Image 1 (cartoon, rainbow, N blue to C red):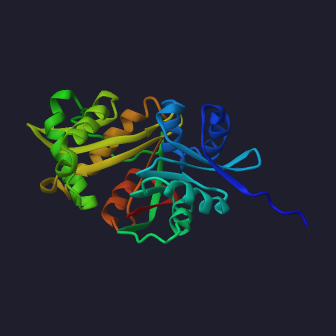
Image 2: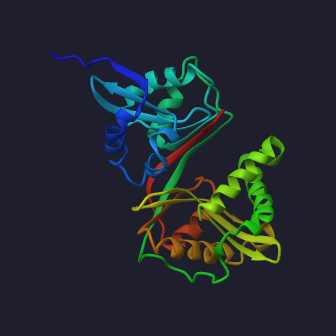
Image 3: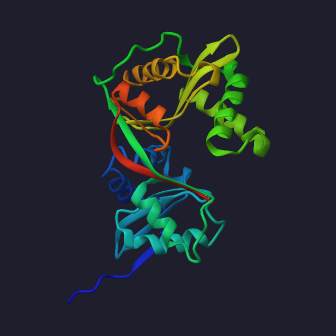
Length: 274
């Protein structure tokens, strides 16, 4: 009876770029973040791979924030061991089976501060969009930066329970500025106040991933989110045929907004915070 070769985990190098691309391209929507980061250049990320002999079977990107793709679940323990050799990851996010396998593989076991499992991964194809886009939604400008920083920080506190401006205000400012400069940020303004905002977390020619969908509390329940996100998707559809996003399962209101726009569930994500 044939026995399986031992899995070997190593930090990936440019020589592995072809294998890495082929691996993450197996699931273009699920792996849109990994594929988008790879498009920025191999050297821009900290990539770890599990090999069976010379075949790359699974991958994880990052240190503090780790995004794994582990179709071979037997690769989770050696990947967890490699990631634990330095600073422990603070968050895992991505494909549900991969995230949970990696989380459960840490030895000694790590206690999750918060576990968001599952998170529906939803997609919308060009031509399936329902709803009327607001003509007041536009790409963010540098002049919007101060207002956008405040709105995004409020959302982060609401979603994550952490104030990013208290943790590292300059880094948060640079993060929002980079989204503006990449044309990955949209706003709907009322004077100097952000009524609605949304950003991209990933872009490929086949699909984008939307993040940070936020409506200011005084404007909720008035159709703002639906009209705002319809405008963002319409803008994206000029270049890319599919939008995706993931949402907390308990956020029923948001899921209803997405479903009314035409989004359907394609897979499941999970997030583990330590």
